[in-house]
Amino acid sequence: MGCFFSKKSKRKSAEKENLTPTTTSADTAGNSVPLGNNTDEAPKQYSWDKREKVDPKDYTLTGLKDVTVGRLPGTLNGKPFVIQDCENCNIFVLDHSATINIDDCVNCRIVFGPVKGSVFFRDCKDIKCVVACQQFRARDCKKMDVFLCCATQPIIESSTGMKFGCFQYYYPELAFHFKDAGLSIFNNNWSNIHDFTPVSGENNWSLLPEDAKVADFVLAPDPESDFKSVRISTEAARSIVPLTKGGRRKDSEESCLFVFFAGDYTTANARKLIDEATSKGFVLIQTKEVSMKPEDAKRVFQNNADDLVEWINKGPVTALELNGDGAVEACKTIASEVFSGTKVFVSDNKNMSTRDVDSFFNFADMQMGL
Image 1 (cartoon, helix red, strand yellow):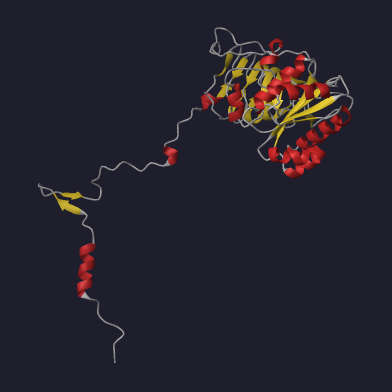
Image 2 (image 1 turned 90 degrees about the vertical axis):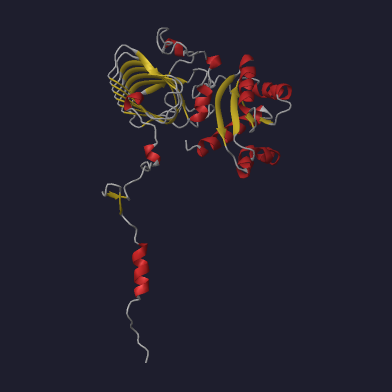
């Protein structure tokens, strides 16, 4: 019978022993040197070892008084920023950032470049500011004047004496900063404030006078400061964000919807339309940039939908509401004379123009969760 068990092969055992690495060798002096540690290889580096070291002080302003401070373009590059315990300061953050928190500041003038996320003021008083952000919040604040561009509905809580106006500001890098922050200059809900803590019989917030100018609230940087080299303008005509009337009462019962479709010159064309229309005395009420689907076109544009589906599929559309007696005919004339080679939608007659405006902007507000 065969045997199920046998002795280990001496040959295989010897081979296995020969494969065991030698850990020492003798040098000329007869000393034993560990071979395993005798290497010039650099320690292994991981991705987190290669990250640029961040100094928190570069992203914080704390405990300052009676100074002009801030950050120049290119110094934040999308990182968060914190301001706290500052008094009587002029603060210019002229770059795009992730979020900005402002706590316990008093009597300060502040300018923020575009913020991808939220700007949150807490326990602040007597603040005048220019802000562009995705979300604006203020809690336990008193007496703030805010020139705002906000992609969502601004929120206040346990705050009083809050006044809001439309963003009006310019510096050369600002348009790029809006793009870097993922914000559209046409999506601005500056006047659509939500108060979490309303008080019966009182108004915790209001709109600034229609003729309010940023320069009367936030002065230009001191010529001796680090910001003297930045070409800043607070003129409404130069503002990156279009100046809109917002929630104020309209001067006329006639409004016109004017829509541009996605293309290389959409922003430039929209600005050209604003210039043309306002020079004729018409008022820009609101603007929106939003994506649409073919089924949305049928609901918003109704009888014109089939002609627009191809253009809607190219990308976001930009819509403007222009107000004033004769706005519809004036916009149709501008469309034919100035934008003859560009695909646009313009309200056809003043009897249907109100429906056009309401249909589009109600749709846009639902899309944006407003």
